[in-house]
Structure formats: structure tokens, C-alpha cells
Length: 284
Image 1: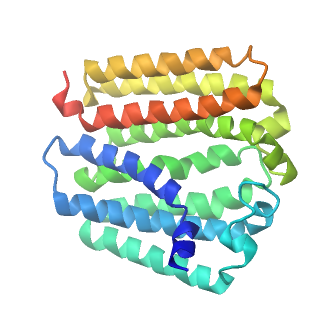
Image 2: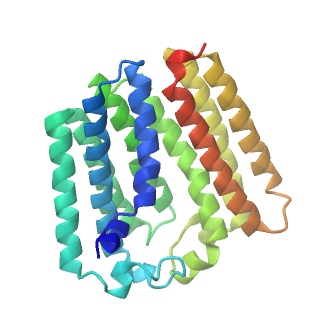
Image 3: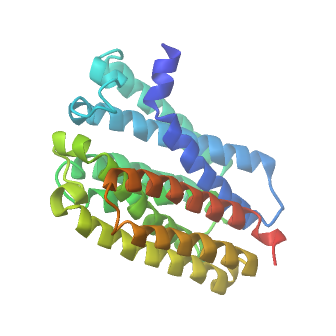
């Protein structure tokens, strides 16, 4: 039963977001890491994300039952009563909020609240009705690195804004790649993601635009003085390689296979970004 509740928090999403939280925290720390602040930031952020994911599972149980990859989730099968899941989400949210308010700072709590609100209140219902659901959802996914950064600095500055923009534009091609290779699932659940509503060719064009924006945004981070030339070189290599594979996608015969590889490569790009900004103070 413990494992069932654990899975209800979507641990994959939590761990993925914590990677970018760590990156933002280390970027702001400049090697002077406050261990207790670091742990409090990660725990508080993880608990709030977990709370949002539990509520998302509750609200999405209707469409999850129509999709192959989600129909075995606990809320679909009824293995956890709805009231129990709601209480669980509330407890996680309160614990996470208390952790950030008491041991980090109010700004980080507000950023976590923005991520929670945009994911649960905005994204979860909008994605069932509008093609812009993915864009709305990118807001919540871009808050963890900002939270990590602001936990250290206590302010929202240019670096925090750039981190937010970079993560927003990275997420769009990342999630559109998922939508392409999971096209049948989304179509059967009647979720109006871009490939379903506008077609795969239009989605690829849109992805290309976002990848260009990603490359430009990562360059700005360096010339704004928050990273060095090694970071710039790494991000140019990974970003241009990502762009090149995107262009290759216009000629492939198997869109699903290409999209799966595109999705995996997007994770490599994100990891490269997170690692390089984490150790940027050590790099020229």
C-alpha cells in the first residue's frame, strides 16, 4: 500500500524536477553551499510537487482510463479511495509549504505555490480543452530551478527569469515529442495536444521554433554574466545537435520512432544544461 501511495506522487516527475532545482541552487551558491538550506529546499519542493501530482492523478482519472500507459494507475483502478488521496495531497502540500516557509524563505514558497497552482488549477483542466495546455503546463515545470536559485539569493533577478524562460522553451519540444509518439493515446482520450489538433508536420515546425528559442536563451545566460565560455560551448554543441536532429525529423518515415529518440535527446540536453550551470563557477 505504501508503494501505491508513493507512485501516486509520480516520483519520476519529482526526481526530474529536483535535478533542475539542484542546478538552480548550485548556480546561485557559487560553491558556498548551505547544506541545511539545500536539504530543506529539496524536501519542500519535492513535497509540493508530490501534492500537485496526487491531485492531478485524481482529476485525470477519467482520461487516464482511456490511455494505455495510464489505465493501470491507482485512481483509475480504485485501489486508493478518492478521499484518502485528497487527504494525502493536503498533508504533502502543507508539509512542503511549512518546510519552505520556516527553513528557506517566503519567495521560494511563493514560487512553489505558483508551480502548484499552474499545474493543478490551470494545466490539469485546460489540457482537456485547449491545444495551449502544454504551454500552460510548462509554467509549473519551469519553477523548480527558479525555486532552487531563489532559495539561495532570496530575490527574483535576471538569472531567475532566464532560468524560467530556458525551462519553458525546453519543455515545449520535449512534450511535443511525447505527444507525437503517444499520439494514439492522446487521440483516444480526446486530449487536444498539438499533433492531434494541427497534425505532426505543423507540430514539427513549432518544435523547431522552440529549439531555436532555447539555444538563444541559453546564450543570453552566458552574456548576462551568469556562466562562462565552457558553458556556452557545451550548450551550443548540445543545442545545435538537438536542432540538427529536429531537422532530420522532417524527412523520417517513422514519426513515432523519431519522436521517442527526440524525447530522449531532449533529456540529454536538459542534463547538460543542469550540470554545466551547477559547476559554472569552476569553469572558464
